[in-house]
Length: 299
Ligand code: PSU
Ligand code: MN
Image (tube, protein in one colour):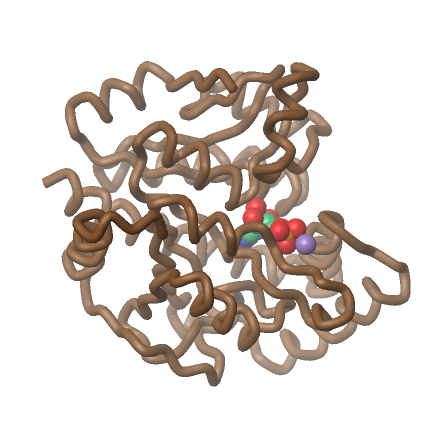
């Protein structure tokens, strides 16, 4: 597949300056219009404000773009484009189609372009009821094969977080709790799942990343970065609306790649936008840490 690295991103990579990858599925399928365009621009500006170059990644007309121009950011926000995981990339290439890349596809393309750090909202994972549905995000297997540090507020609490951590263990993906001993639960700062490893700063994370390369391992790192407690969603409302959303997905027979966008938009509506504000805040929080890690790795 042809990968077009934007001028700004390739200049930064050539000069060994910090670069942070951003995904496009969250823009096209995770956030409602027209708020999504505003968010896409804000995320890029935030990366830049922390001294790194943003590289939003998407597939446009069969070509993978690493770093988007302004009109391309508008395209992923306003056009109805497919949600694209790794397995969709060859199909979009053959058909000259467009796709918003998931965490999995973004990590894959970032790694190909030589980008080491990626900020998202929440990683995909094992869905509740996966013992019957087999619904496990390709984000997990992608983390096992792409050497990118992904900064995420844990995984979405609509998932089976315990099973998600078990799979990450099987896949040999290190999970580092940033200033926490517990796996964050996306809109909530913590779950009751304890992590093996806690780190206090970006330089510790960069050291693990470098050690992984020295060991010639193919895995990335999941940096579990909790939203600050005073910004999290109120637990009672969170638990109630999530249970409703999961039940609605089952009742309406939502399956496959439609599940995550369905649940996200369900909770945004049911919470009158409260979950959306928390979602945006946790991405902002992840971008800050990702930029710090990218700067450590470029130093
Ligand atoms: N995190 C967010 N919003 C999102 C997603 C993650 O804050 O929309 C997206 C990511 O692109 C992730 C995808 O890769 O949800 C997971 O989808 P699935 O469960 O179908 O693999
Ligand atoms: Mn799935």
